[in-house]
Image (cartoon, rainbow, N blue to C red):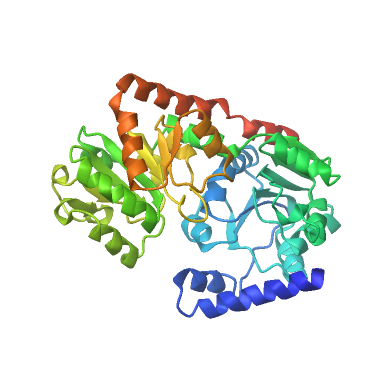
Length: 405
């Protein structure tokens, strides 16, 4: 099985290499792993994140160790360009790298360089050679905000190698009791329910959000509908609301911001009422004249929600919805597409009637009408959303109380 794993990784690498000839994200993925020179440390704390979402999820734990151990070197790795390119200069780390391809030689070389006291992986990403090398050197390895489902490869008859990878983990901090039961079914007892550190992150952000003056000027006292992390299928639906709710302001923060995608989004909207955020930095535009603002950068969304009254979260017509908690923390009802069953918090928000799933334009319009027709009910829903997030904080404390350096 290990031979198959190694061959599959090499095939994956050559596939990305071929795709990089015409895909910018793949090009960054390949270039970021070439001829890396690692800083040499005698000791460090290693945090790995798959992408930007996992970085924000694990950030409360990262911030804790940065503050408590200011003399310790902190090394961050990312698998995806969408994490590395946005956070490669974060002051929370002394060094930030792409995670090298998971080979035995790469694992030895990387760990030789950074000499970690501990390694902390957030939610996803299980790499045989890196985990095996840490285990051989008796370096503690922790999974935080982990979540497991029966359909994952670990629990299949053919998942023997992946179960071996799990055996290398020192302790699992998981989100729910279902994950505990699944791991214990494999004979893994080194597990506890800590909850999800995303709740700590989004709640802290909602208490002290970054002020965005131009967004406030754009809002200008109007109700605001925010469509966050949207894909084309989402944008087609929300664009219909723009025409129906002319007294509202709309903000789109697309998941992908290349020119082709932005132009496609603009084509769905009344042209005379649309402005890009990048234009606000260079032009003294009369913002009150515009109904729709398109955020054509990455990194603002978590602060945008403070200006919203309703939120639509994208991704539910694709592989799965994006982060609902950032909006819910501000006490905003969240709406999303049908593919949300794998997301525990979305299911719980739906059960609380603070989150709403829709399948088409008609359902989106009827849901928005329902939320707005009764102000007292709307206020109750908002309070449910915020209370849900607040009541689920505390994962960071549970994790750091357990891990000793």
